[in-house]
Length: 371
Length: 151
Image 1 (cartoon, each protein chain N blue to C red):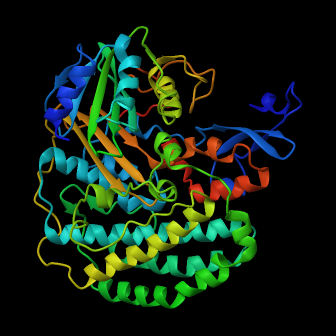
Image 2: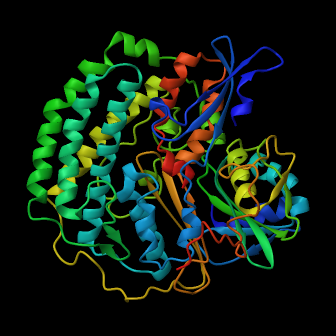
Image 3: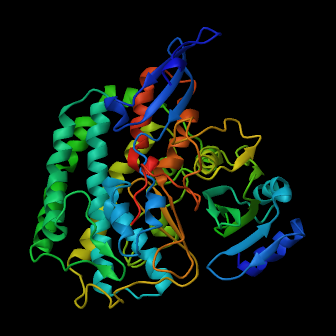
């Protein structure tokens, strides 16, 4: 790939961004063709962290493969596990107990907040503001502590299993979540004061990385990126799973279609997540946290597709079963992969300095793209 | 729109299409030769408007490969699945990256891991693996004594 770097026949400059670059948040390698400061083309080079999870899953049982998926989008590991568990449950037609359903939704929403917090801090840091990172981590650490108590892990949870969740909630869970909500609400105005209202920040975000509604659909964008362009695509609303059909929350939409729109979406989504948690935290039903399942799971012959809304968009799990104890073929439709395909279109014609802002609002997690 | 209504429209635009039952979505099976025309019609026929291609993948059935496309309409909210059987020794199919832009990367992934060549694809190269890699890793008969761990 080194030999591609240099000057083209038309006098355009070709440079590498990444794979070791702080703004790519992982090992993403972009080969950028520049005319002066204007971007003419972006080519992503992937595979630096490709572990072939899909191939690995073909030799793992239906209980084991869920653990691998925590390593895809590690910031949404609960939701990855959730989607996989739902797909297996669909095949086995397992009814998940109400307690487990509520626990799953609570964990999903806490994960979403934690993920957006990290994105918010990193986004501001990409644009040169260092302090917001610490503000974001103050709240995020609280969530990680809550997770650690119940799941035993802070990042790769492996908490959701076919039929429910692995263990019951920690006795402190409710109290600590309520403390977190109180903390979060007392700090939320800081987010806007520090970053959102900052005139320099707005100047760098507004009208940068334009993505029209038609293009967002054509590029298969989901999550905050599509919703920032006015596409209604929240899986929780369109195809409600677990108890999402019974709680009140809004699908946040923006029609700005630029980086600032996508920024606002994530900030408001955090507040919607808080709203969902508030409705559920005092109403966790009693009973089992896991349905009774057989020790060895065998999915019937057929095809099963389950989807969930991660912090980045729509995660699809497509299992093809031949009736055995392992999947014949498994495909993860990861949100980051489709979202990345729009980067070239969004950044083309813009300035190289704006690329970091555009890339930041895509909220890329590279293991999710490479899988 | 219900699956039955979708069936009537799809049979109208492509007479050779057959359907497979089971699963929540309707499965349409067509030949690789009809694919490009059919794809155009899926996107542009009023009432279908399948504008969102959300999953492109390939399955190795040992005797043949099958390309699987999942479509949803963001207007009508119906979903269909299209399956196309391909020859295993020389799998080739027309690209749809000019109709749905997301297909460009997804098709490169299918080429990289299954060796399906997409005719008229703007930039068909390996996506994850290095250019000099030999073999198609997600095929069932792929062997790699160094990198593969057998359980």
